[in-house]
Image (cartoon, rainbow, N blue to C red; front, top):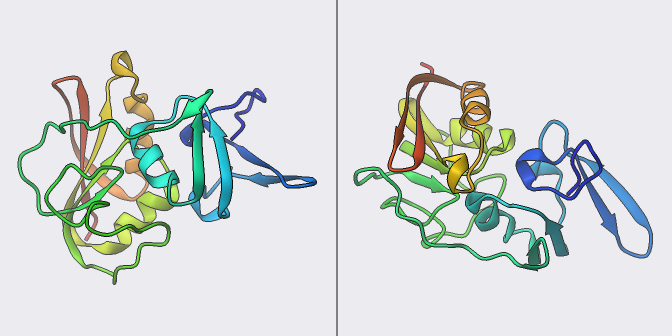
Length: 185
């Protein structure tokens, strides 16, 4: 995954994916991101967000962050119990990666869920899919660790979430940014 400066980066900052398999192939990640990633043996990036790690492991046998294998660190999210589809975390009480391993596109019918939690996945394809599978008027929470703790810029999360949802609240809690949106009716 390569950023606009030609440096190795994470999914949220990547503009292209270089695939080397005997020859070099470049895939643009400028608009949709996950929908353009094929199944890979090894995927190398830098400073992956935790939600990206959990999601990208569906696309590759080995996910390398800088010079080591990427791993998911258990993080307790600062939300009350939620019955929701959980993307980028297995730390909530609805359908999540511990229950169902899913990737893009989600294997669920339209308007299947009452709410959604998106943890550290800043991908427009994922936000579109969440919009598709939640019911009209549903609450969607995007949770990002504060930059001080290795997270993403909350303004980027706000920009991405507001592309499909009406943002109703943004707050900081226990080192996390919580951006609450509602599906437009």
